[in-house]
Image (cartoon, rainbow, N blue to C red; front, top):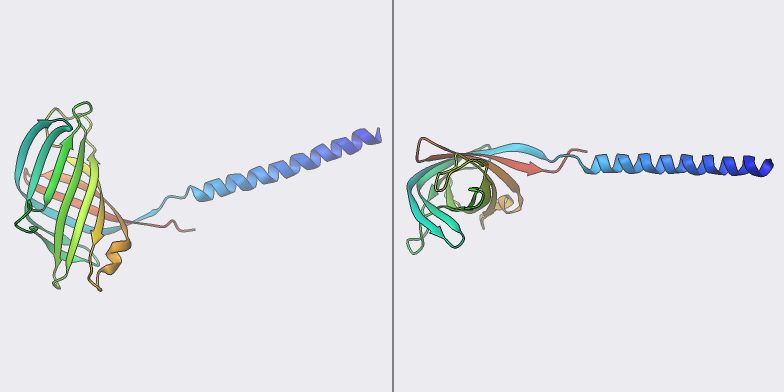
Length: 187
């Protein structure tokens, strides 16, 4: 009888330890699944000069949106977009539509000249949010991740941030992007 009581006590103790470990593990999982913070970074307005329909190729339907100009305004950054060197295509968006799903991927490249004369190179990549497009139809909304590169001491911090933009095409040739900086979760 004493052996049964001792065994029952042992099982109860092991069960309590297991419950404590499981509760602790669940708390750690919930803690590790915290969402990152997103804070407003800037609004970008781009004027598209032209949409060049390259057409269907081996990778899909290619469209080039060449940039005529634009501006960026935000709490820590103001400037205007300028064309890149005359040797290469002007800054803009290179869109590729997947013929199977009609979803677009984007490859964007720009230079920002800040109001205080600094130069910042921006690349963006992303995909369209419009899933019901027909072949060759331009998306009205895209999601984009941006990477900034600069040697400017004042804006060097841009090299080390993560941003995400919601891009909307409005009024035919105007692109507006709301850009959000992604930060660590608050613990």
